[in-house]
Image 1 (cartoon, rainbow, N blue to C red):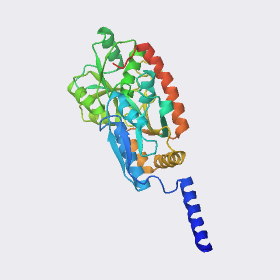
Image 2: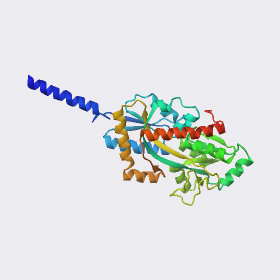
Image 3: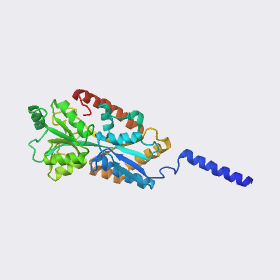
Image 4: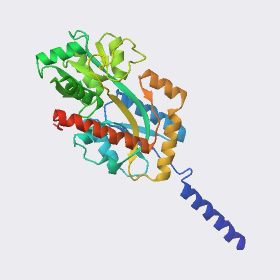
Length: 321
């Protein structure tokens, strides 16, 4: 009997230790990974890469679920309302901060979200239909000033980096252009190629192939530096808008009350994945720059982004509609 009691005590002790550490407990079922845009854009491509990598690392299924609309907010709101157990996460970006600046978030990102880790950043690329008469930033500014509101620019939705790149351009160039939002990058590019819209501050991962195939014409890149893949393409700053700089910055996120052991497990996994050579190679292929940083760095970045875009919102009078 004494031996049986001793064995039972040992088993209970081991179980308690395992429960406290969370070792081996997560994930023991499939994990959903929300994407706030349609398939095909950088957000979707990165989500699918990290779903595959996380699945391999944990020997578990990570299911990408596209929930496009409202500038990414449909997916992020669903994340904020999901059980905080680590089985629902999302690939988000700095549109979370931009939407907060526009006061259109149905959630409070500081209260309701917990970043897991930084993933990557990409500049945008200013593109026009191949047959467009516009050949540079100066042409665009001149045309926009000649006919205020006539030129249109498509985007992946309100608050996306593609949208806000256009709004910042308007403010800095002192011009008026009409924004045409879509539910993702791909449908916007379809209309751009056909000439339905005049321009787009597009996602490099999908716009550059269209430029290379002759369907679109590239005018400038939105980041501070020229791109390694297109060294002859000037920046918008070089085109005359001093200080212009817009990039999409991607991060994985979970509901705010995610258990700390689960958050730590995911954050460490993402940090490891970020360093893998084939991930770096994939980033190069989609013209992205890999990032480092965990929850604290991501939250500090989002706070700074919200302040930046609040100034643009005030200057342009942006509203949800």
